[in-house]
Amino acid sequence: MTKTLQRLLGIGDWRETAVSQETANRRNLRLLIQLRWLAVAGQVATILLVHFVMGIRLPVFWLLIAPAGLALVNLVSVPLTQRRDAISDQELMLALLADVAALTWQLFLTGGAANPFVALYLLQVVLGAVLLAPVYAWSLIGVTSLCFAGLGVFNRPLNLPPDSEDALLSLYMQGSLICFLLMAVLLVLFMTRINDNLRARDAYVADVRQQATEQDHIVRMGLLASGAAHELGTPLASLSVILSDWRRMPMLKADADLKQDMDVMQAEVERCKAIVTGILMSAGEARGQAPMRTTMGRFLNEVVQGWSARDARVRVEVTAWTGPDPSVIADPALRQVFGVLFDNAVEAGARRIFVSPVVRDGQLEFAIRDNGPGFPATILERLGKPYNSTKDRPGAGLGLFLLVNVMRSLGGAVEASNPPAGGGEVRLILPIAALAPQEMSDD
Image (cartoon, rainbow, N blue to C red; front, side, top):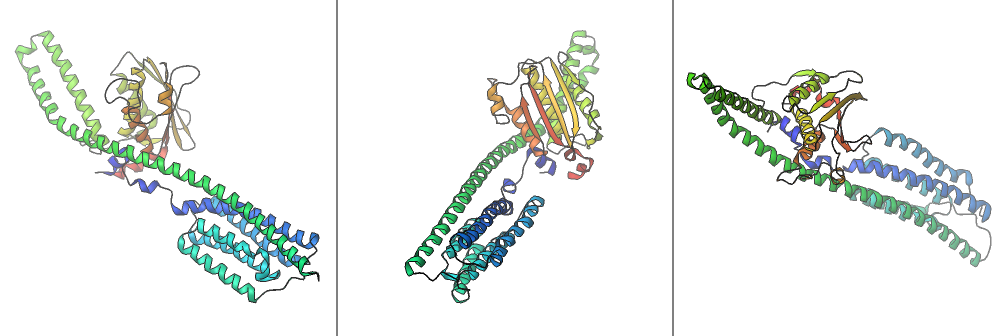
């Protein structure tokens, strides 16, 4: 199967579009940055509270080095998440190790393992277990355990007031309460945001699976259509030869009515052959017709003229281009997209169709508006879903379904609405690069 068929029908491993671990890490790092700002504010407030309110003398300058360092880490991390689409597990691990290092430094200056805030190591472990791969989460447990053990040996004792054991116990309980509140607030904020991320991921995965199901449906339809086109090619060629022979026979040529009927039959056979050729071109089997370089304006005019020749009752008007007329490859898939839209407008009762093309920010945008009754609400709600149609006949609703998936495979999008002026409007948005001349080498 050729690359053109794969691009047209959207064939490919749907897992390539799933949320990658590195992309999830980028979101998690942004979440960690937000939590770190809260931690910095909490650390500064706690240091000042203990020193000035609780009366415990602390090395304030040296302790404030830790939140200042974390603020610097955030200032470095923010542009990193903006410039890059993915963050590795190693980089996320380093970010958590920076928090562990800051906490260890503060605990070293304030009593070591005897400090009630040593429980904040558990917060780092919880974050690591949720954000990191298992190997890094276990590594973080090992690092925090070593830090805890080291603080039991190496530390600077607190300069506590010479009060009774009850006073010291009261101070310890107050510190534990502050530590608990800080951990609880950060964990609630963190887990709430993580749950939001998980729900967004599940919705995305469900959408990807739906697209995979639709693409599988399209593949089967494409293979069936391609096979049918091959099968129809031979009888159509035979009919064309027979009609040509009949038209040369003097006895048949003498009958004016019969001659007119044969002309109509020949025209219909040629139309069927053109349809078969279009199907095979869409499947990457162009029957000797090479892709053609043209401009988007010329291509659009050819599409409109070719379609208008089929139904003279409907008038299709193309407005002048706004902006440059880009050079493109005449893609049969895009030709069929316009054909489906025009056919649907006529079936809905439209007699005038307006096509407004524009080039904006590297995107081709086409607004196709008609003077019909507009789209029913059910169609707009389920745009692009198979068999989504108000027509009561087998197979109805596949046109828009195929159209949306063809545009998606080309990197574009489809929007539908009912403008206030009446009728229905479909907007096609397509990157110019999808039809650039270099695409000729895809086959």
